[in-house]
Length: 228
Ligand SMILES: NC(=O)c1ccc[n+]([C@@H]2O[C@H](COP(=O)([O-])OP(=O)(O)OC[C@H]3O[C@@H](n4cnc5c(N)ncnc54)[C@H](OP(=O)(O)O)[C@@H]3O)[C@@H](O)[C@H]2O)c1
Image (cartoon, rainbow, N blue to C red):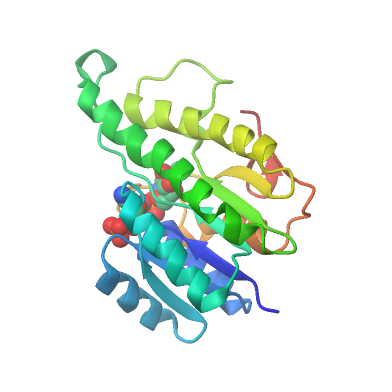
């Protein structure tokens, strides 16, 4: 049975690269986007085995509708890749950060991921080996020197990592992990980044398809566990 894998925010960047890698390995991939037309177009570019769903992770109605659509079409979900995120405060100082920007960032990157994970938990429960991959970032790591770059984004990725641990505890039969793609050439990462979107997507693809199911509650980069 081909695994059924939903990737949020997958019309471009790392999500789109992961969709291509997973489809090439025989998975049935569902591309999520706030704009259905954009998702349909992206799915067409990848060819057979890829479908599209409208999914705004900040909108309860949109999430519910996506669950209903995927339930009707496939009846289960084998992997959920929570890839969607926003970065609004690139070079902003924490001292000037508006609380609204932090709230908006947390609402997408953390609350949105929780909302989608909660909503798809029943469909994941119908899989023999369900997986959740939260696309996080080294920007959220707590083991290094204090950093000043993009405070709202960094705070959101640290919170996302705790969400990963909480989900792993709450869903003992689901393999739940965070991963960092590294700095990649995408709309978010910019053109100076050293990695291609495909290189960034590799660990996501591995976690979604091949990594051992008992590897859970971890933070990974380049297919290896890294410190939180
Ligand atoms: N690029 C890097 O260097 C880098 C480094 C570390 C971590 N990451 C992480 O990797 C992931 C992918 O990043 P990327 O570089 O590929 O970014 P990107 O090109 O900006 O793509 C982000 C995607 O998020 C989606 N999105 C935003 N708000 C959404 C919402 N409310 N609901 C649903 N989807 C939403 C967008 O999809 P639509 O507009 O189609 O809805 C967009 O396709 C993110 O989690 C990011 O934090 C990236």
